[in-house]
Length: 54
Image (cartoon, rainbow, N blue to C red; front, side, top):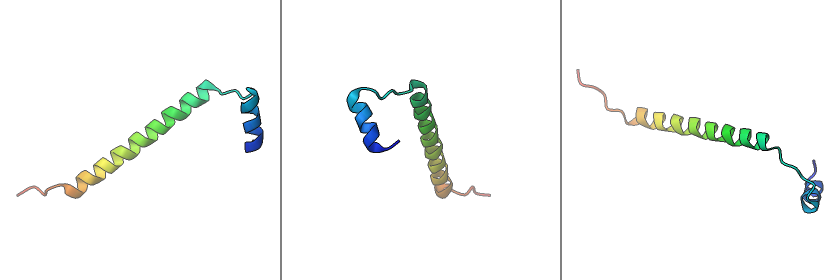
């Protein structure tokens, strides 16, 4: 859909949002951010880990 057409639909109040699609997108983004954050934390821990004495 072209941007101009989309803006016109919004302006006329004709644009409809699928709440299930929006909710799924929000959950997917939160899961991606959580996975990325966990990966960064794990990477930071592995770089700062102190070797154990023998």
